[in-house]
Length: 415
Image (cartoon, rainbow, N blue to C red):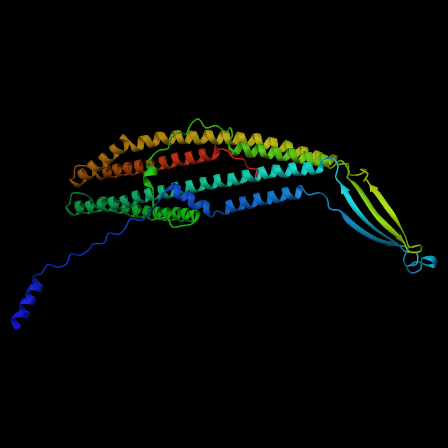
């Protein structure tokens, strides 16, 4: 029995251990720009405000189509007097129905003004969505760019730490003065400070994007950022939201002038009723027509005010188009300049800076190059990498601004 137990223990000890399963953590989901835009459009306060404005304009349109309500009057005369008119013996009771009749096309003018406001409210919804898209795109650009800058800052901390280690070794070996170690230590501290600032900037940009998209932000689409946008020239303002909104403001002002002119025509009020005479118990019909006389308020001032507002709307339309043209030209100039910088910083200039830094590190470590050459090469490399990121960010931002400025108004806003 003892031999059997010993054999089992030996076999167990010699048996191969079960293979351990290594769990590789899953990569965080990548939030693309399209997904960020979809998430931002689901719960956007600006979009909700625009939709509420559109519903309010629709309600105003229904109100404008209503005709004036009739009114019912009940009057008793010759009551509580003296003599023959004491008590209610001589009372005369009148019941009448009064109906205002609008003249001068007031109802049609109100409806036209309400329709103009509906069109403008629909454009406000489109503008809110276009503005939200611009804001989300710019937040996405900032989030990616700050993360790229954070990576460079982390690399610079590593490079500064290695430079300090090499400088310390050279000083210990008597091949350099202690000044080199002090200089390297100062640069290391500066790199660590830059890393802290880059970390906070990246955190802030990520927080802004998360708030706009109403969800967590983990990984971002870095490949999208590295692809320079195209088609940034030949942008026209014809048929854009900017032009449509300015034109809609003029149309609303025109409708307001029509409303003011219609109010110059006085309305008729007709009434019909019956009067009961208490003494004879007889009933007599009553018919009346009233028409206000324009003496003090002729409506001229209201027309002048509406006409001035119309001129103001037309001037603002021209100013808006001019501002938009200048903004398009500025965005195209920014894009052209950034394209040159990105092409230089990401092409041969970056390759040369990388190679120069590599040679400088080897030469300094071997004592062939002075420290100043190493520092200059590292600074040039960091500046080149930062310039490339800044140029790409400017390119994407220029595209986003151009897309907003030239966003088409290609839908019928009136329902």
